[in-house]
Length: 198
Image (cartoon, rainbow, N blue to C red; front, top):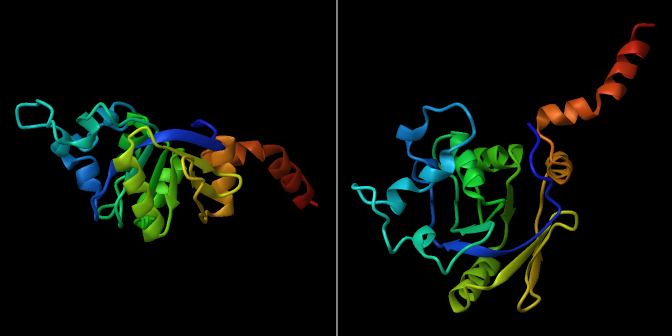
């Protein structure tokens, strides 16, 4: 299944300055029964967003109308815990296309890139600058430039480079998952198979 192409994203950001956010907090286990990648956004951070009677918790950031955007900014060690793909599905289905943190759990990071979410790892110092900028002005915009591998605070011009696997970068820029990548190479694969017969 192809996803939106990711090249340059300019957006406001939603701050979640909590460290060690694990996949059970991102999407609780009781919501993992579905196998389609749709509808999980409704239960993103479910136990943090809602009371037991399903009323929204007013002090949780996703229930605060002053914050919006396609970028989620999380604390250190984001996506730890179990390897459930549903955590990335929930973030994507909610509308986020990029998550910024100073450290990601490896499995969550790969699950995110596999479905079109760009995890951007920044230094702890730059992460703190982002949090402070959003706190001072919720309208603050970030620009994430995947081709140049650079994230910028547009108000100040401050920026930082980030690393990404070349294969994953190629797929995100083209909107490919692993199957799309192979299908895009099918003529080369067929040519190689034909030549290998002799």
